[in-house]
Image (cartoon, rainbow, N blue to C red):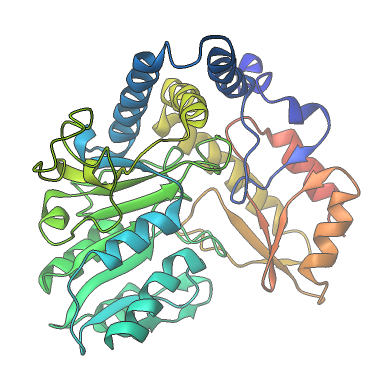
Amino acid sequence: MRPELRALFPITERAIYLNHAAVSPPPTTTIQAVEAQLRDVAENGSLNFRSWINVKEQTRQLLASLLGARAEQVALMRNTSDGLSTVGNGMKWEAGDNIVTFRQEFPSNIYPWLRLRDTFGVEVRMCEERDGRIDLEELGNLIDERTRLVAISHVQYASGFRVDLERVGRLARRRDALLVVDVIQSLGVIPVDVGAELIDVAAGGCHKWLLTPQGVGYLFLSDRARERIEPTLVGWISVPQPEDYSNFSQEWNRGALAWETGTAPTALIHGLKASLELLTEAGVQTTAAYLEDLSDHLCGCLNTKDYDIVSSRLPGEKSQIVCIRHRGGLKPMGLYTHLKKRGIVTAPRGDRLRIAPHLYNTRAELDALLDALP
């Protein structure tokens, strides 16, 4: 941990913050970028509009690089829910089609599919959680010739379970289904390669591991997905020449760009660019290794305490998110409150307590958490 990196996070002066799987405190460089854009508008109005567009395109390229995608395959959205909803709404459905997912998915990756169930008679098949894990063989057995898409999170928010996306991608391709992945709990801290992992759609928000204020997200569409999904929420910048204002004969923009509708959260995008530059400079592989070391240390020490580790710690399944359960029945909310009073921020999720460090956290902070656990 470089001291100059940690110094970018003023929250470290007042708390041990271990809740990055919910909302991350942005670094000072990100806040400065947001403030600078707002100051620009206050002082210059629209005079620097072209530079804002340039920043947006640079941000798109940074996101594409993290995903292993082409820039035109990435659209800037508001959040995960918008991205996943527009995917479901843009496909043609028939009664008897089915979607395969996981019962403990975050609701952003459930409600879009339930709407399709209620509207078109699409069956939503859900794989169950097994001891904090997803049995991929069980998931695969739910996929058949009527499966149109398989929707899964790369890393599960309530267990930290990391899915072998390439394996799920092969299962989906076997039945010609799309693999739709919520990558909000992985992008930036776990390597993602949409091509190698056979990902057709990836969506996420930027307020967790991407260290950006709430209100901006992204959507990736593979060429294969773009052939099957139509844009359904469109606007004046959904076309190739948006400033050709009177030309209404234009087709939709290429790739995922048609999914961008109008005025964007420009200040937030400036902040996102700063955060992506920081994460890129730190290196995703380096960050992943550092967080694996932290979480391995935490789990090794927890073995001496009265807690069960819900999260799988198997190679390829473990992540930077660690969920624990007290053997004596202490409730997660009680544990959260106990730790919060001591300046340690975690998160209660169901019957477990979730611990989620980021790249600026230290082993000493995890030791303090261990000492504070009742």
